Length: 144
Image (cartoon, rainbow, N blue to C red; front, side, top):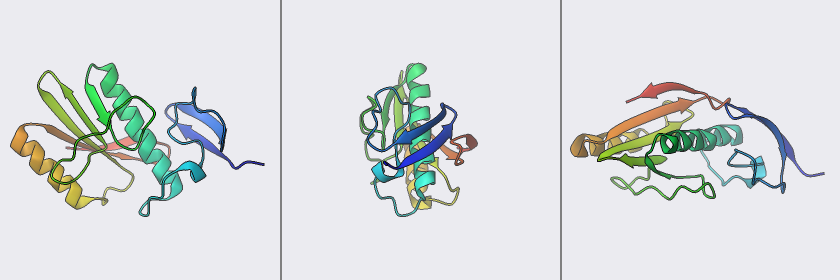
């Protein structure tokens, strides 16, 4: 029997099995075993993180932004540019405006990266947003 996990998010709920088709699923990963190795997050937190990126990218796209998003290949968004040596989770542009977005599961994660993005935003006039998502993939806190 293939490994199965149950995922619940703001997209809905699903039980997914490794190897099943993802063409209609709104999730980034079907299974914990499919995910890349991310040392600082649990598998559940990584799923919440990556699906949070996908939700943010889709929301910005629906609102007319040109979106680049990291960690969600296969969903039609290109790779964001590096900013001060770091790649943001989401990078979006619209009519001369720029948004740099990070999705975290722990508010204390990646302080140096956030400092680099804030510095770049201050220098270029971009907006930096830092969302904290919980394991249910709900965006619960927004830092700017």
